[in-house]
Every structure is written in structure tokens, then in C-alpha cells.
Image (cartoon, rainbow, N blue to C red; front, side, top):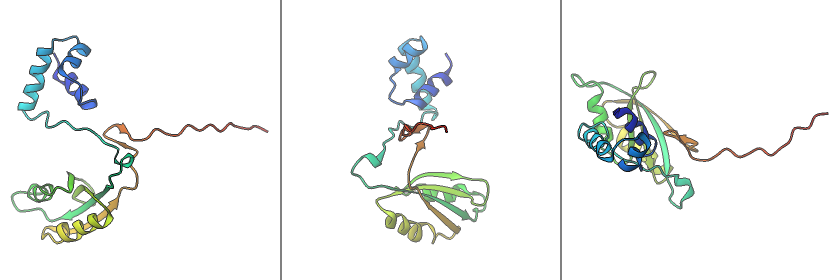
Length: 161
């Protein structure tokens, strides 16, 4: 059995059980369970995550994308700096980038001020940080292949003269 088939199914829907996948692929549940367990042990499967549309709840949440120019550390490159960033709970993602900026961080906070203070007090003062650019997310349309809101149907009719 091809591990990739199982991984692709789980990537699309992490709520699938080994029994669900076994039925979908025509395999035994034990085979599927063994592959999933092996993939977890090897660090291929690193977590299960539910995606929540926080705009439809009472919880206030602000997301920002922070671009950072940094000075790489001798012998460690960007890894040591990235490790310092991902230790913070507010930092949801850290990426090494090509282009104008070296690192990109996705940060979440309760409000704009909390995110701004985090950047000003925690990130910008770090010795390796040369500059930052903060972009606040105004609305999420799609994330990780999941659409947050369906496009509204346009009921207007074309009038030809």
C-alpha cells in the first residue's frame, strides 16, 4: 500500500479514522493503522489540527504576517534565529523565505495593539533583527485549501438592449 495515499487523505481531512481510510482504499484497518503509527514515529505526521473560522465566533483574534530582515548567525545560519521566534506562543508559523525578507512569521493576538507591542517589544529589539514589516490580515478567504466563506451567488440578470 502506498503511504502517500493515506497521507493525502489525512492532509485533506485529519478527522478520518483508520477504518474510514481502509474502506476508501480497500485495505485492512490494521494495515492503515500500522502505516499511520509508523508515519507518526518517523515524524512524517507531526500533528492533527482542526481549522476554525474565528470570525463566526465571539472570540476576537487578529492575525499578522511579519516579514523580517535578519543577520544570520555564524555556523547556524537562520536556524538559531528561527528557533528563538517559534518559542513564542503568539508565533503560529515561521518560514525561511527568498526575496527581500529572510523570515516570515504568522502571529496571532487578541487585538492590533497586542500584535504591535509583540513586534515592538519582542521581535524588533533582537540583535539579529535588521528590520520588520508588519501586515495585518483583514479577512481570510482560504487557508490550507479550505475556503472560509463561499462566494455569494450573483442573482443579477444581464439586460441586453
